[in-house]
Image 1 (cartoon, rainbow, N blue to C red):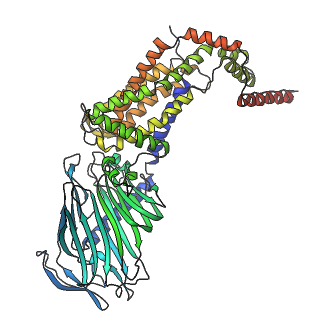
Image 2 (cartoon, rainbow, N blue to C red; image 1 turned 180 degrees about the vertical axis):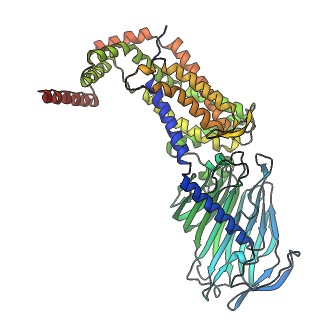
Image 3 (cartoon, rainbow, N blue to C red; image 1 turned 120 degrees about the vertical axis):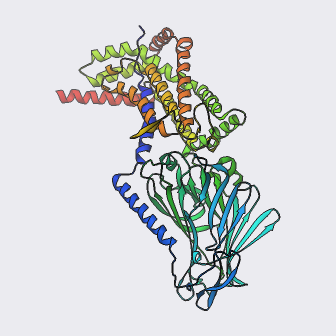
Length: 618
């Protein structure tokens, strides 16, 4: 019977991989104290929302009753500030709509109160809204010349809708008079998610305290769109461009806040959709915060995170003038790369460092090419096969290292018996044997490490690829979400209330792969009594961890491990010959082997340690 051996290098690779996953998973879990704090914050947010819905009496507002049934009538009601008063109009909304997005702008506050994605629906076929039912607010706060506070949310803006060529232009003016006003201007282009937005004032130098900047406050609670709110929340994050192009993010798993400078744009990402505010002039600084609203998996939960940004706007020359852009749309590279001048593509979570580079410049365009002529699920299979074939030289290197170590095992065992009472001498002789045979025990680790960038890049690609959203394959209805073959009447901690088939198939494939590479005598390895347990733990982790992840990711791991098994079988049966490897090693032993500097240093250190040990015994 063929002897199987311990593949310590494969185990190290898997431990590294799952170490990353476990660390990432547990760092996203709030502690009991954090969970209690989050619950308190949610209750406070709900209380504040109710308070905001109540009529508020501000010092700058006179008590009036506005006829809300007439959305066009201009009333003679005034908001007074010193010698100035703002004309109020009746409440109402104005719609801007093209082929992609519909925005509704309220007369009160002049802000967007509804943003609907026309071409997309949620997992339960409800239209995708990024703004709806008071989940967002946008307001300006000014200091007045008589030391009072003026807030744009309390002002009524008079709408004027016109066309500029094919563009829709909405001017919202909070007027003191015909030539004294605060204006929000929205310009929507056909077939475009980006809306030009400007804020300017005219003739208000006497009413505003120009020595103090206006404070822009933008707040939004992310509306749930996916089946699993916890899974969606992992990829819901505040991202921003600042300090000359640096991309930073607030925490995705816990509450976070930062104060930053030179902000170019802010992205309130809700997994597959983003609400972005970009400024042509950049914001000089800003206070940014993110509050996690998800405590546990719940079918009733509506919101993922609450974002808030406070940005000062300079009042120069006695007036306010800022040019900005609103983006309400998909977090899709095919869309965002159209706005190169703003750099909005950088808001996509490709991953950090080399992992993000591989994802952005290799896997994303490669998969886009394959899916342009193949079904989306089949494109994943084809991409996986091609990736594994490209990595087959690494697999070969790893298997060759295993074969060499297997050939040397009898001699290593003999050295272990000969010097069982002298660990230092045994280590010295073992290193000499490796050096003579031309074998490095670490050579198998390098292939495992080389695969980590590929693993992590794909780990980020599948859950965040907009191209996979709501694309079906076999029994999976949505490759960007988990597949379900059975719904459980209860919830299993860390697993969920459903059974996904793709993670089961991936776990089985991993188990057989580890059976091939680890062998039956894992437990006989000195100092590693629990290594066989790893062979069973890794598939179990895969089964639990990926049950709520994108089915496209589990499909990749299933096919990847299946292809790896076939490649290793082919290498073993048709490429590598253990007798030839043994003969080559014996030839290597006969040849004088020159030590490199590292080997020489290690040998000298061991010899010094051995000498010191002998001196102590005397």
